[in-house]
View 1 (cartoon, rainbow, N blue to C red):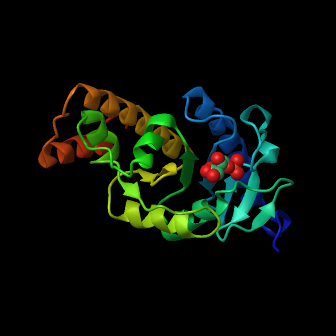
View 2: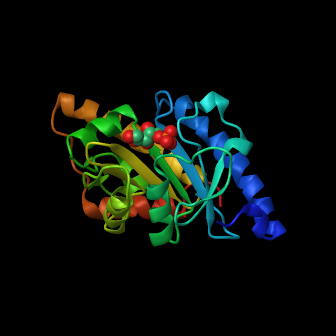
Length: 229
Ligand SMILES: O=C(CO)[C@@H](O)[C@H](O)COP(=O)(O)O
């Protein structure tokens, strides 16, 4: 088993930075009402080595510290840390191995997104916010049980067929990806928001679909123009 001391100083420095960032981002999960107890996790991949930092399993968010964050290789093997890594480590690792542009992964059981997952139904693209953030519907991934690569495989296969940074794993809940952990946390916040809004709309009637060319225009503007450049 390799250990952190086997890596050059610049890798160990990035590990310290990413541990702080991933620890801080976990506070966003209860802040935005995305988790109960410890039912969610955040990870970020390093740029300087094939490693990623993830939450320790079952540790309450107000007890997390940068030092408690666990460092794993892309096969999910423990490289540095005194705690056991998240029970979703294999899924995060699989995503990193098979989606090279992804450097952040988040998993929650946020209420409305998980309710859509329980029904195995994608969230239709009926909001401009969905065109912006997801470039279309939020897709549903296959039913998969924790313990091997099946969840990770389902995430990757589903996201490769979509522009969405979020996937609703059937009967389980949302997984989101991004260029870093902050982007993946944002996607987790946004998928819960649109899941709730579309659910509310459906209580009042049939939401109106947005034409595909308008969705494409929304996604292009949001991806390339929105915000500060
Ligand atoms: O979905 C599950 C368990 O079924 C997990 O996502 C846990 O809810 C969070 O696990 P840890 O990250 O604390 O190991």
